[in-house]
Image 1 (tube, rainbow, N blue to C red):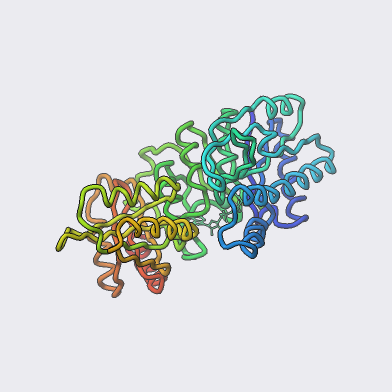
Image 2 (cartoon, helix red, strand yellow):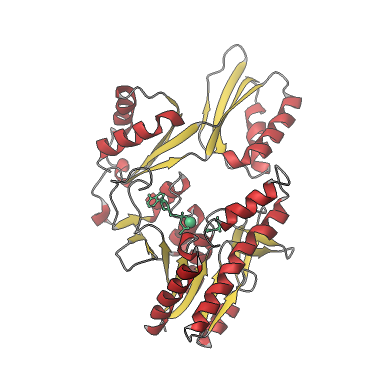
Length: 401
Ligand code: ADP
Ligand code: ASP
Ligand code: MG
């Protein structure tokens, strides 16, 4: 019998009526004869509310305890969905990450799935049950509850689909993947298909519709992913391996992120090992650094700038304080009002001129950018958040997004 993993995000299970509606959709799928695993997120803004409560007690709450706290959100929604399914007359079982065999490694609040002991899920499926799994959580080697990073229910769903060798359907509050976040640019185009490669770049650069790691897993294990609306039957977007039919535009999408800050460290003595020491210390605390730029050495000093998630601010400050003890002459500056804009497209591999067009757009619109980095299929810029809207409109127009 074919299996399917369906995932419903926070807004889609935001209240009791919505949970009942999800139960009906899941039941309909079960009626088709498929084995159904459902992954759900915490209801509505629950995770934000839980984090906010912890932050009212501590500006940097202990991460093990945060995981313990955050994981409760998903536990509420799995139980309610399973109750709703039983009420409709379907046999179902709710499972926490631990009960579903989701084993993780790495840091609390951003753990990674290392394996899934799938036997329990399979046993319940073979007993004819609908299996409702808590997204976003797992258990580490020490037996502690961990979470997978914000948006991590997508990762739970795709990883389960990889393990079961089936398709993963992501149901959410938007009817597919758009060239630009429709909340930021309402006339963006909906894409029928997008390659794993492009979706991976878009997600990691701010397109929060899919969590980055979920796409990495999807690509690695060839999981077909379908993103669609949870409230109605309406065609969505397929995320799959690139094929020639997708090669219509040079730029497929524009990702926008306000979640980063730019850290500048000036007056670093130009000596072998100093710059690497800074990044090693960041890596040792698992701080995710993105755009890095360095000035040419002048009078024995270099300056570096990099972007990092704003929610890592306290960890970064601690690390920089430590570094300042070793290199007292450095000067540190942190800018939080920055926006990262990235154009993404496989077409860039074969067509040049995108960077030139982007520079022209910025010049014509009087937008000063602070940093620029490129890879094979993307170009990213950091700009002042003040210029964000102007830049999005101009870029979308130029590239027909
Ligand atoms: P869920 O709670 O279902 O996981 P999310 O809020 O994580 O939902 O993701 C859905 C949201 O992602 C949409 O409401 C949309 O505003 C946003 N989004 C960001 N970039 C894109 C994009 N390129 N295409 C579609 N939606 C996007
Ligand atoms: N509830 C978690 C979050 O808000 C996980 C998820 O929604 O995917 O980040
Ligand atoms: Mg999400």
